[in-house]
Length: 276
Ligand SMILES: Nc1ncnc2c1ncn2[C@@H]1O[C@H](COP(=O)(O)OP(=O)(O)OP(=O)(O)O)[C@@H](O)[C@H]1O
Ligand SMILES: [Mg+2]
Image (cartoon, rainbow, N blue to C red; front, side, top):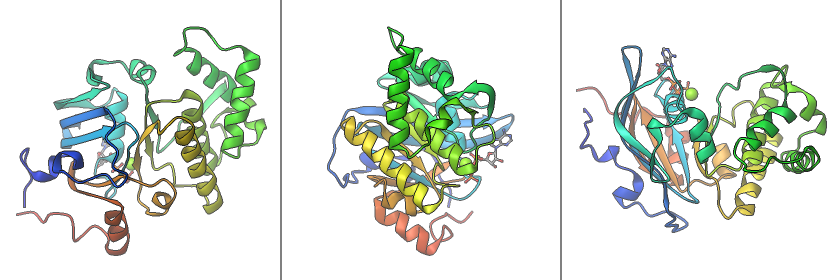
């Protein structure tokens, strides 16, 4: 069975009329229509449509290599990927013509699946510089230390981390926690979390998820979240309004939290269309 632009699966749940569990109807933050992208000559995203409104949590699941991280990197403006079709509006503006830093300042945040190590730059300086880039008045060193401490407490991070180089020598779980610390400090309107749960032990998963929930409660549901994951476990903590399945660069199914539970039980075989 093939999929084309007119496939019902290429429509977002809102367009398909799947009601949000929490009945939210916030403003549209992100509107992706029929997005295609390739790396070199190799097409990876093959017509993705997805609408995310303020306050919503969208989980994206799907087999390895289906294009989940590619979607997140294309949204963030990674230079290795060429957008070959479709549109992406963020807060009503064309996201695709913005430079990566403009996307970030506009309020889009990406927590990487594989965070980079930046030797020589402390977490404190990195985050203060990033925060000041989006403020009219720079925050004072004293105020920033207080803010950072509050956010680190929220995520159960020892204050010694602030003076360590970004991700340098961090364990897998510490890197993921540091990604969420960036989210906590920068206060984006939309956060894409790419497998933030992988590498976290059970206790860390609970702390980090509660941290994300606390941030969202504090900011009246912001950021909206696109949560890429392989496991239902994190969805028990950060409850999705919608779950989408990505396969071979296309959204092949969308539903509510029950879909994630079904995938965990049955795997992907039953849902992935067989070639003609
Ligand atoms: N820089 C690159 N060069 C070549 N191929 C790439 C590159 N980036 C992605 N791809 C290919 O694109 C496809 C999608 O990769 P992507 O990382 O988006 O998958 P994913 O769904 O995030 O998988 P996973 O669940 O394993 O993280 C894969 O076949 C991958 O090999
Ligand atoms: Mg990935």
